[in-house]
Image (tube, rainbow, N blue to C red):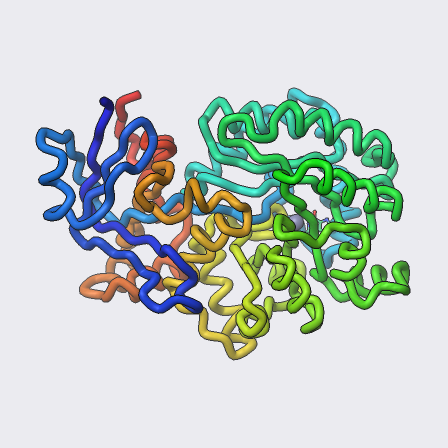
Length: 433
Ligand code: GUN
Ligand code: ZN
């Protein structure tokens, strides 16, 4: 038996605190017992430790939280972060499509996938729902790299038969490649496949319909796309799909609005869309730093809450400005306040962990540090900078968390653990295998 105990200040959320008072689970002197990558016990040290006599225990200095779960990110855009000057549609043309063309080269895809996963570990992100490019090999490269590191990840080949020259598939090739990728990767170890039409404007009706058939034929996979991000995009969608009630309805007409559907952004949603999506059981990956960077707008947290809409938190790199979900939580607070909504720091932590896990249908496995879950967790340092140390001295738990969301980023990630193994140590300490 390979049992190991981690003693420290442990914090997680078992439910959305906006819906369930008492959702916060905090063990100020806690013990997490891990066996073969799984949490077999978690609770107050004084309660749990007597059950495991002789247990090897490591004291972890800092705040232990679940590994962050990025509900929407593009690994091929890693090197296009901070590309200047445009809103969504022009930004795609000028900066993103040229960068994605390079992923025709599998070696390039493999190298970027490794760099991207290194960055996720440095930022405390242990799971993500990830866009590849139109090239099937980009997804092979990503899944192979994720599998080698034992990570729980979801990814998909982008369907875009109306994309620019050099980044186009066809409805037939899109289906054939997606089916081959599902066979190769879906449900293998910790990997999930996501059917990934880029957005309504880059797929023909025939391709959107084929995406709906793929979902119906493969009930375990996710649907991952963009929705109602930018006003010009929305106007172009309305002009093309004149029969549709609104943007979500375009996807609905092709069978893409399901309980396993994850839509990035949803910045400009009519109440009808919110109600319909909540009813279907799908949800929105909220990407606040991306929405500010591209001048898209601010997500309406109050509207989503009124409709009981599932939401998670996404970085949306390369439109987002940081892979850090701590940083994105801080931006979410500011974007929320702009519309009169006060995002509670514990709810922000929920969105970055259990909320995203629920959205990605991986909440049985990760996101809460509950007994039986996989031991993906992060050790946070709330004194990572001199200013953070001043601000958090003598502060409450809520204040410490909020300070890290507003002032912190990857500097606050002291260690990242995957399946109970240390996958990143900011301070360079060597760990056992
Ligand atoms: N809509 C369609 N493609 C993209 C993309 O790559 N990034 C963002 N932010 N929105 C999109
Ligand atoms: Zn995106």
